[in-house]
Length: 133
Image (cartoon, rainbow, N blue to C red):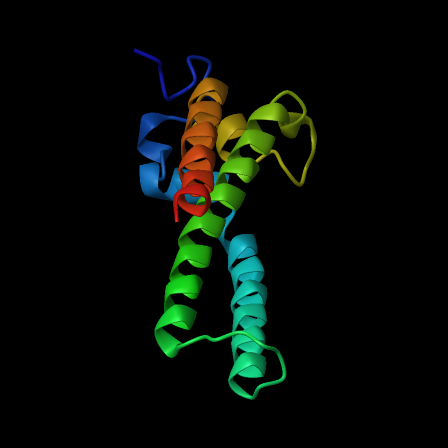
């Protein structure tokens, strides 16, 4: 069994914010929302151009919704996984910087190995969504 919480955790168990909070912090969901807004806008512009015969592509509203759903799920998991892997990679220097010392790994909320495994799992899942659809 791989420990999810660091053995050298500086955080007391009563301070642990909960796993949902830890995982969303690892994924940096607030940043990903900005990426997804841009992706959705690009999909909508493309499909509006096709509906107005400015590009030669047949698209229904169902196609648009389906593309948005796949993009949001796959993109969120892929980008979130890469953010978690980046936090694992920087786990040795994060405690030294004021801006990053409160991330989940330096605070001891999750072990570096747990963050890496989480990042790999959701990155592979997100990429698989794009490859399999």
